[in-house]
Length: 410
Image 1 (cartoon, helix red, strand yellow):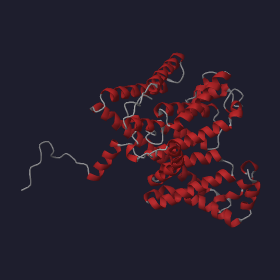
Image 2 (cartoon, helix red, strand yellow):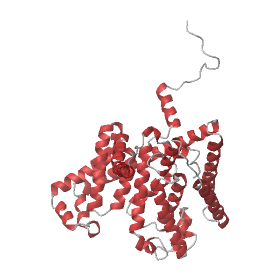
Image 3 (cartoon, rainbow, N blue to C red):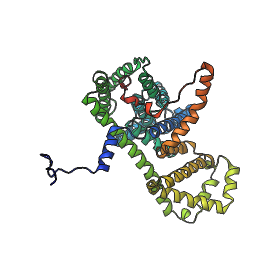
Image 4 (cartoon, rainbow, N blue to C red):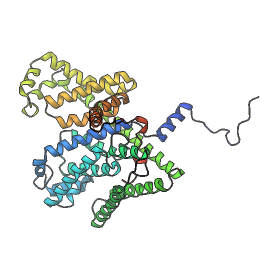
């Protein structure tokens, strides 16, 4: 006879072992640490390149000399509820402060310094500039807009960041003093208080910022005084769930972009007859290299193959996620396609933004190989100068910077 069931377990559903393992994994760790780091680095680099390239024209794009005037921007944001701090004042000094802060936030997030705080500042900078003049951009701005929102929810500083370096130093027993963290947390609290007193954004957005600020303060206190307690474990589980959900949304967003682009192309007659690529190659605005564009447009077969290939790859990409090898092949084709758009059509920032978003699907083994190749020469140079071999980072030792008691302050 079989053993009787424990009391209280009769009729209680038990999750399948596979489902239980999946639930344990998404709550126990922040998945895709290298993919989130690459997305962070790529998006920030694209945004910084754009801001620095347009530095001489910043006043005409987003500042007081913009054709889309301050009154029009304020009326539009008042109607659609978009967030931008540039409508708080139309002074030239205020614009310079916001533009400089956007550049600084991009640099800090690119380096992975206090990613919790720098991701929030990065999001504020992106939304403030883009919502100030909504007609500026080439499509890549929409991708950066979305990625800035998602990065705020991810633990994107686990690897390849100054936060990860600081945590690794603490794990090796090296002295690490965290004076910048509490100071930054207090500074952000003062800014939130000043914003609330002045009446900046609407109440819901201000409440969200205050909640994030208070949550990170609570997290730091719990991690410092009760690092092994149940409350700390609960906070880690919540952070992992939010991170994994945000990474899933990035994947879904990329699939939606390609699926909608591909299916809309199918409905166009120029894409159906394979001549769609011919026309932008004859527009002055999209031909930075006229000789190269003319050479490509002169081959009808090549135009046909590229037009049909673009539609095929975009439509098929979401379905290839079921097969890793096919997905990697189409991902490489996507990257080549965006590089071609950057060169032939003169849209480098759009291409860089899309490649940065595509990086969420890159295999971990490739990213580890790429990271070793990038970090190898500086490490060998440092070893020759010091006479000591500098060990490279190990995957198991690159802890989540946001989970360390020394680095929890945003």
